[in-house]
Image 1 (tube, rainbow, N blue to C red):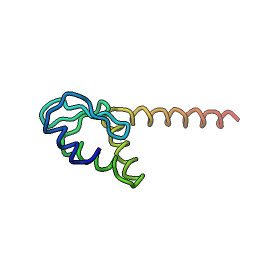
Image 2: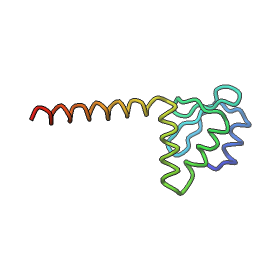
Image 3: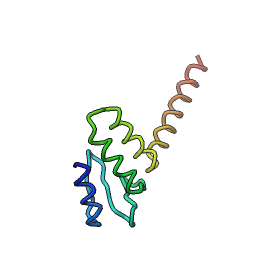
Image 4: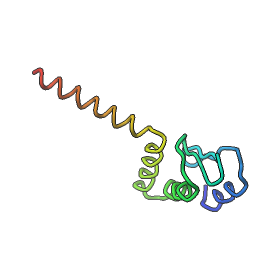
Length: 95
């Protein structure tokens, strides 16, 4: 999915979802695009498309983290890591 194809999709105001590198883009309101449940304005969504289509793995990871942050997934990941660290600390403290 190129940037031009994304712009065409937005300009058509299509209600059909668009898949970009495993992420689902859906037009909700004027200038609002949801990506995997997280809300982004058009400019942010266009930036996500650029990063997801980049050859740089760091740009792709950055885009995925931005999506996780907006849809609440990052919060769950951080809470899970904190819980795992607490369990490990408790296990070492008992020894």
